[in-house]
Length: 141
Image (cartoon, rainbow, N blue to C red):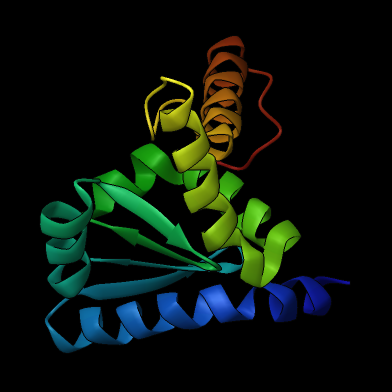
């Protein structure tokens, strides 16, 4: 089943792998962590800062971060996007774009009101609450 999730998400992961290679080629770093590749620095930093205006972003099973602390800070949030990509597969990026357009067309914010982001934010808040209560089932980040 896990192999099927990786295969279904692979078209998006392929974009992430390209970004990872560019990141490595420009002085960035890469680490394998719990079924994903996390990359930061180099191309990832430039891409996130100047093209996306973000600190972290998931492309399939590759999570891009501006810096290691951004990967740590947004790990739970970005892993929700990894799971969303496993569900939506190659349709994830178009669906995400349509969700942004739909939010904007309804008078909302294209990012904050995107239902993919709402799901990731809820998971992040729940994890923070569980950690504060000492009941988190997740291993330390």
